[in-house]
Length: 200
Ligand code: SF4
Image (cartoon, rainbow, N blue to C red; front, side, top):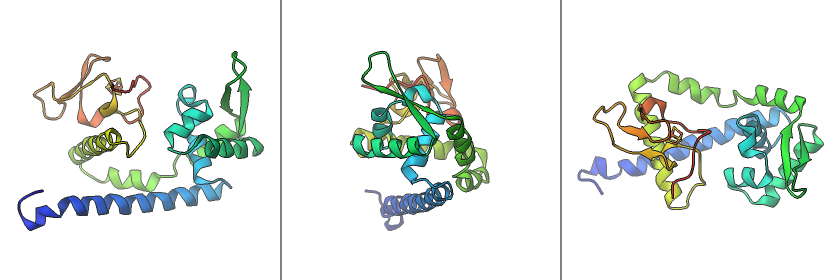
């Protein structure tokens, strides 16, 4: 707990602000999904499959990513299949099914991609330094929540086994990526890295 009264409830107000942001994002997501006849979870699945499809092409992977049970995600995938937005094709082992967006599914993913444009625009109004610091702070908070089991794994630098914090004197690029063998500027920290591997 911090010293002065103002600082003492700063953490509470930060949590309140993030909660309010969450409400706003849920509302934006529902509006966007509804306009395409989808549920928010179906929208998330379509968008996930359009980005790095190989990492997310199974029901189990999508369920883990969006923190829902496999049957819930299976229902969402079934609904998308009936809407002709994705197909399931057998893998060589004959058991698991690979999820692939149809041509119409890819088209819908492109239309849905800007669902959070209002939030992106709001961030864009901030000074570059503030944006980099905000990204860094949010990734640290998410990483801490993940360590405590409150959020699921995300492919972010701060949860990656190649991430080496505080290796460099430059305050704008203090961390290091062992895989890319390069300092990581705060503004370049990744939130969905294809090379990510979970830290132990
Ligand atoms: S591999 Fe990707 S996620 Fe991992 S530290 Fe490097 S840039 Fe970040």
